[in-house]
Length: 353
Image (cartoon, rainbow, N blue to C red):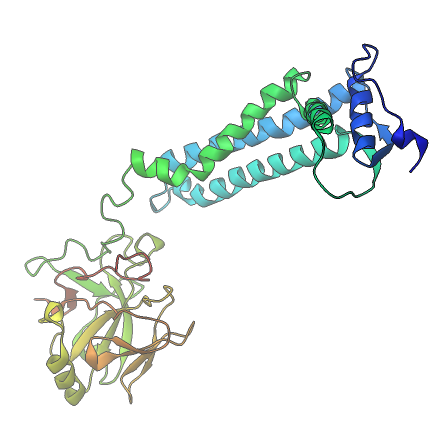
């Protein structure tokens, strides 16, 4: 070991700087600092410029995070035809959260690359714990490193760090939003466009051009996609409402009536049955109908549902039957719904077991 590594420095020497103590501590621990260079002199214009840049990124993070929280909780997200505000809901969330993450990332990178000093050290490994004197030196070393990382001498940087606080609020926005506004009110997960239909006031089943459907228009073994005959019923506002209306063969209709769940009693009309078109696995359109096997297939993950047994899943990842829509033929001779689905439509992952 070189002489510089064995020379003992008097720690009580008043002329020693903090860095001298740090260097001595490193030597006693088998580490030689061969190069140490601050990137900018303390208080220099260059350092102040870098501080301003880092502060800008952190403040950008704070502003974008705050905007995300505000938009998440108060921006009008409910779909309304012709309403631009609801259409901007998702893009606004993506833009604000993206800016927040970019800001904090660039701020940390700039701080590390432009404000922390360059250092090269060579270390000799040793066995056993350090003695009390070396522990004292280590404490001073940690204080010195902390001072280099500290924002105490950089007030602008210290203030800008407050901009990171809203980033945590952005992570908690779903919880905050749920406390301020109940996400299940008014039962948006449990109602479709057929909500409000009754036997006395049924809602017509219509095509995508809003024309109603008569029984004779669906051939035996055939099927057609229908929507609620209400304003906006075929739009994305009621994306949970597409329904598959199927005309079963008489023998298959008898099999279905024999297998009906209690909640589905009275839902089919003669040899016609209507099921939600939204797969209960991941929400894909389950619309590939095999009339010879009475199976309804989902093209996304190959779930299969048996039409003559309450659309019960018999293959694939889906674990829940497709909801059945109660239907009738109204006084005008058109198909209509006499009520909403008895259970929520779509994926079942959010339901309690």
